[in-house]
Amino acid sequence: MLNFFKPPISIKKWIGMASLLLFFWIFVLTFFYAPSLIRSIFLKDFYLDKLESEQAIMYVNPQMSKEERKTILLLYQKSRLRIDSLFGSTKSKPSILIGNTYEVMQLFGTSTSQNQLQGQTGMTHLTPFGAYIVLSPEGTNIDVLSHELCHAELMERLGWQNRRKKIPVWFDEGLAMLVDKRFEYWTVLQQDWRNLINLEKNYTDSSYYSASSDSLFVSSFSLKNITTTEQFFTENSQMHYFLAQEEVARWYTKNQKKGLLELINNLKENSFEESY
Figure 1 (spheres, rainbow, N blue to C red):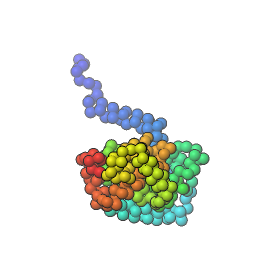
Figure 2: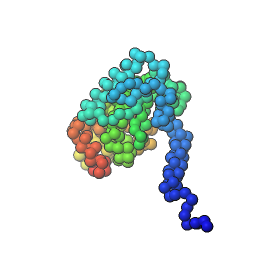
Figure 3: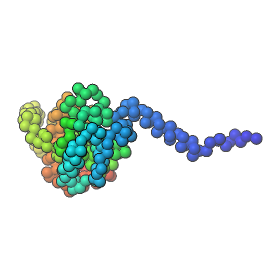
Figure 4: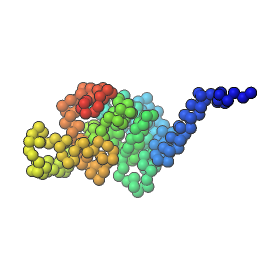
């Protein structure tokens, strides 16, 4: 006689099958909504050549010459020195995908046309599986690579979940700008910022600014308004980069390497506002 109270498949098998099905659908949905991310994680070995290096996991397009590959390895070593100077050491080991044509960026970074890729330099996929840095020909330089490595290093030290939940975008980008010397002086933006502060001071109670007349938290371009990706990367993103760099540079000058490491350690238990 059949035992109707005993399932034909054990609970463990049901859980296993359900987990596999869930993973499958997550993979399918991610592929449709973020195909470049899926390719970066799972398909880079099929498209690109892996460079032999103990310090880094680097991939280049097969057409890249031996001389160009040697230059890439040297570039990473120089960029890593900037991360060492900021954090004290380099703990992250992201996958770095580099091309001397725009195909690598198109496949693994931004799935847009070749014409639209002109001017794009680099990007980083930050995932629970690790960081995946993608550089275009225009981004294959020490500034862009150092910038992207900084994002990877912060995630490595904090953990993917903590970084995603606790770090405002302005701090992440501002920290990366400390090792990115492309816009070190920001002459025009600096003047725009000073003009903005002076303009607001004319229409606002001066006592509100008594603590710090240049505070980046009291402007209409406030750091509080650029905490998320959607808020930061807008038509005003250049100004946002400047504000982020200005604030984080001020903070790092005061707190230095020791303060940064203490902040990261405190963020594992506390909120960003409490730690900062």
